[in-house]
Structures are given as structure tokens and as C-alpha cells.
Image: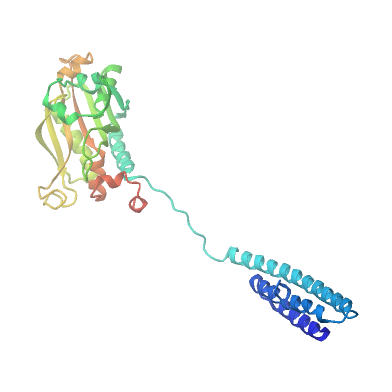
Length: 339
């Protein structure tokens, strides 16, 4: 039995020292030192020995077990340190490799388009005005010459917070606030968010953005309006751009017109973007109705003015070739990283 014990101890020591990882070391421990291990098997054989041999063999078994457990703990510590070292090497930064460049964000196409539009009008001598998105019925409709039962109100249906409190359906509300606050001359552009009860689709949204323009002074004519929009169109789309006006109706301007510019994709020859017409409609414009000027206390015999409004989404979609307005609000980085 002593010979068997020595042979088992030598094999156990070799196996413990030869374990290359913690899992393998645990398997060796189970084979030799476990509850059903070889050392346990030898220990159970003591009962077959004579009484004078049992103490000596029991002492040798305990001594062997203690030696093997010391080797086991030492090897376990070594393998743990080796594993930590290997992990550190894997996580170590190779300073010879090029670094990962961070993503530099760009402007949202809506903001980029708006900034360019504002730069053009600032260069023409306009200032920027802003007003509240939550408005009263007076500023939203009444002061803009909307009769309560006029069919034009159908196009301006917005969200009401109370009977007389609503979300503005256009930035024209700020025109009234500006004219109430200052005497002519007035030259302002008004960027802002608007709201209408539109069904959301590729070209409509319940929330959208407008840029409104207003000019009031002595001797302002329709020619000034056309010249301003022509200068704006050429600065935005190129020197060969032309402007077209067609009669339209807005309660706060008289006469009123829809204005379009030469298609900047086909240069007026006709294409898919302009639907073969050679023109791209941008917005509405006209001479400020005398009723609106009188409502803010301006002398209608002395002052005239013009106003215009454009949708910023339409500009951005045409400019960047974006087919669906909803992409502008999606937050999808696959789309936004293109700009």
C-alpha cells in the first residue's frame, strides 16, 4: 500500500505541475484529491491493514494529501496570474496602429438649408424676427384678414389648446407682432416651426418649418417683391435661375401669387423632379393687404409692403434629393451621416 501511495503521489504531482489552465487543474484535483479520487480510495484500504500498520499508513496518506494540496494551491495561483497577464496582453493598446478617428457631426439638412437662406436675406438687409409657437386666434387669423367663415380657413386648420389659443399654422403671425412693435421701414425674415392637422405622408407633416419674409416702406411695389425673390433664387440655386409668378389667393396679401424658380436639376428642360414643367414651386407671396397694415396702425396711403413664405422642408428635399419628408424627422443616422 505504501508503494501504491508513493506511485499515486508522483503521478499526482506531475499532473498538477503539468496543468496548463484552471479547468485542467480542477480535473486533476478531482482525480487524485476528490471525494472519489485515488487518494480517497487508498485511504479506504486502511481498514484491511493490521492494527500496527494503520497509524503509519494513515500518517503517510495525510502527509501526502497535505503536500499535494500545497502544490495544488501554488499551481492555482500561478495559473490565475497567467490568465490575468494574458488578458492584459489582449487588452493592451498597440500604439503603432493608427487611432480610430471620431465621427464629426454635421448640420442637419434642415438647419443647413435654413442657415443658407438666412445668410442670403441678411445680405439683402433683412433682420431675423421670431415669435411664439402658441398663439391667440387674433394673431393666428383675425389680424391676418381671415374672415371666420372664409373657405381659406380650411387650409389653416391647426391644433387648438383652448377656444382662443392655438398652435400657429404659419409664421405670418410674427409679421403682426413685428409691425405692432415698430414703425416702417420693416424688413424681417421669420424662421420657425408651424403646425397643421395634415395627414403625415411623403410630402406632408403635422409639424413643419417655414421662412416668412416681410418688407414695408414707402413706395414698395410688386417689382420689389419679384426682384427680391429673383435675387434670393439666384443666390440659392445659381445665376441662371428665373422666377415665375402665377395668380393665387392669400387673405393677408392682395394681389397674391405662387412663385416658382427654374428647376435646378434640368435647368428648365423638364425632368422627374419638376414633373416635366421646368419649374419648381417654392411658396406664396404678394403685396400686404391694406387691411392688415391698417390693423397695426400703419398709414395705408403712405406705406405699402410685400410678404412671402416658403417651406424649408421643400427646399431641403429638393436641394439634397430627399424623397420622403419623414426622413428629415426620423433620426436615422444612416440618412443623417450623408450630410
